[in-house]
Image (cartoon, rainbow, N blue to C red):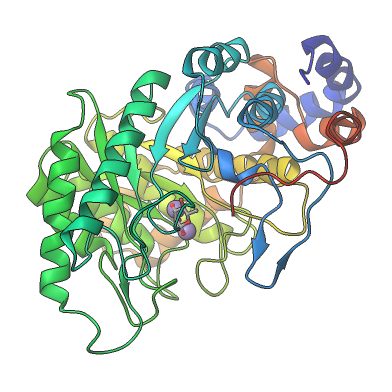
Length: 424
Ligand code: RM4
Ligand code: MN
Ligand code: MN
């Protein structure tokens, strides 16, 4: 299904007076309002193809109705999200969950909805029915060269799909690791991984990047071969300029200072991009900003400061993507909430008084530095997000419009109640 702009406008008209009053109130205290609104309007966050169905846990999966049955329907759902928030103009595919059998028609459908293809993701963490060797004991780090070779070939195949779709990056996340002490020689596992990644790296087109994601545990619980940002950065540095580290917010041990990691990766020019989600305990893949929005703000504060220092374009210099999965919410509503939370944190980071903060830091004025950050964090920037969306032709309040238009009911009518999307 496709959302017509006039339907969105109709609902906006009901909300516009209240919006104007709210905007006026917040606008007063903001320097360079127009520049902030322009940056917000330009900021887009990719939607992963695996987040459009209801997620599950290892205990079960409780599908909601109207889930997309094909890649085409997933693209349509991203089209709905983008029509509402004007901030989700790309989709990231996981191969082989979503193989673009007919790349040119898939591409045409996407561009008709104003979408393009973000990074392509390989999958060597599950065995596929037709595959010769198992990934039970790992893929790119495997002790057996034949298994490594198979995983390398899969990644190259994913690059080829991505080339057909116009993607510019391969995102690699490995579940490789060990469950028990003694199972693995860490050094050999690392060296095998490096050698495998080198072959994949050599197959990248000139204008492509490879993003190396790290994760400290799960599905392996004793060690993971790319367990933290140090190991990822080590690999990225050895591979070369086209390789960089991908930060997934859920892939950190409790209380890790992620904002500091981000700051240093940016300094080194090695921050590839982000997988946004939120978590209470581990890789929970919860809605962005649902548990710890302050941390998200602090991360964005480092992102904005670091990107500005290097003269980077906020919206295009790094890959921004949601990587979440939700087992009790409507996936589209959940994704709309995540995008909104990201934009709120971004807007708050944009309005931090940078000059005052630098002065406070240089004067060791700790209390004032905190005040400056929290002043931005406690500003209700939602009218700014709404205004940016409105200017781009989107909805003032995407979720309420989604509900008002009864989009899910229509999807259920079209697709039925029993559909299950590929993914997690
Ligand atoms: C992993 C990791 C990857 C994602 C898969 C589905 O935990 O975050 O980025 O592709 O989950
Ligand atoms: Mn991820
Ligand atoms: Mn994850």
